[in-house]
Amino acid sequence: TTEHREWSMEQFNTSPAARVFFGSIKACGEGISLVGASRILILDVHPNPSVSWQAICRAFRTGQKKKVYTYRLVAADSLEEDNHLTCFRKELIAKMWFEWNEFSGQKEFGCEPVDLEDC
Image (tube, helix red, strand yellow):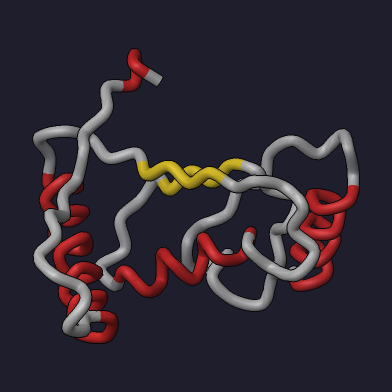
């Protein structure tokens, strides 16, 4: 229910005992603030990168006092990895289209895989 969602968000943002907030990208993409977060784990790949960014930005709202780290967990050598790379390319194209200027120059962009054991 809407009331339970509001209560959960309020508890997460204000209670020192609240440590984890689970939510889907779609459910966390609109109408909530997660300023209690210091870590965001993205576990699924949405075909529209803007939807993922909007969910991530729920932690970067007015009132955020913590440094926030975002992690995307993607299974190697999988369809999920292919989808993630497609989304990354879409983000790159949008960034180059809207933010490029004569001072941008040539820059290398890429994804860097990290083994969980190295974290």
